[in-house]
Image (cartoon, rainbow over all chains, first blue to last red; front, side, top):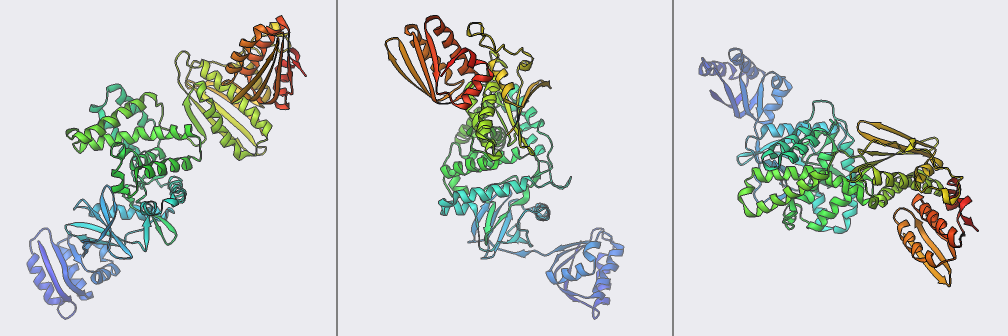
Length: 515
Length: 99
């Protein structure tokens, strides 16, 4: 039963109140005190509450105003029993909508404040969750805004944030397109900060589990073999305890007085960055692949800007201008991105809608094509994974030259490394998968003192140790010379070390050069 | 990228190479030389602007040398240091005529 408390409860009326209240709640099992109209409570009044609680250990107090809450908080009552604050009522009528996410809509209520109104009317738990994760992120060093108040907006709840004179990156891009490169740089700086932040175990959900739910859902919508592969690709992504934002697009990054703030923290999780890149791809490109104009409605800028922002951000994040590297990681992101888009569209009844069906068909066919050629969702800034064909040699060289540029390598050493890489990559392209083709991975590593570059080539082709082959006799006259074996011989001559091993189904060839 | 400039006079061809002689470009040189060689007694290769050579390029040089040994001579001129080193470690300096 709910009992209303009114006016003031202090030593002048406490005894009478106690008698009245005890009479009312006598024999009731669930007792709730509604403090909506309670203006003040003194220690005499608090003793009344304790007396009631003695008979009713599950006693709750609700709708407590700020003044009374402070008293209850200071006296330790909030730790002792369930005390719920009264929520300030806020109207968003006529307010500017500044953001729209999966769980709610953000409005500016005045110059300094915004309110995030949750879609779900039972959102108190979500709000609590978002506040907690935002606090956690702040403690871990991520600049973010934390809500200072929970309010009632119509039938829903909202959380209020102070956001002084701030603009989202989406607004900046729409109004000042010349700031694209600046936005990309800041956006990527924050992205790296998020992904470099380790999170104590158990504090945030694992994004891999969420991703498993996307792909599991698709079982009836993909051919069995493709679905099996999709599931195994996600399963093979190792656990990662670094932070993921989960909805990282240009409306969730705010510029406030020169400071960049991350907002909309409710999707915060831990996991491999590929899951983040997948959701970024969707936010800037995937969602709009058929309806290019729709991005305007969400981000305020056009399709070309969205695509360009995505591509530039990915390049900066991977620290490369090598198109093959960017494409490699983009394709991995698309596998997960399309899986998510498909599940979402199908769940929302998209198969019954002509326009949505066209999108579903596009995403599905792209996903199937990608699955054919994807062996892993993992990526590394210092690795390039690509089809082992001679035509891709230029991409390998371009990628490595970019990495070598940071080593102050002499032109001669650069040429020698270039030559060794050509010999080995062409060897893999010619023989590893013959007559089929397959993937090769080229990994770049550098160690200091003296600066030594190690380049590792990995392929899943037939086991073959090129170093086991006898060196050609370089003293023979032209007529007796064989044309084979020169490449590996040359590589051994110009590198400081060349080694081979076959391990876990992979040919691993490593070359080293002190530069 | 490899630019191949040819001038043929009677039975003598002068071919100058500019750029890289690698896996991608070696087949282009091979095609150009194999077209010329049947009519030649002298083949002069100018390497002034050749920056790079890999084993694919060496194979083309070896095949050309073998062909020219039967009908005349082949010479390389203006080989830069980087390319020369590759020719040396593979023993090509012994089988090619380098001026």
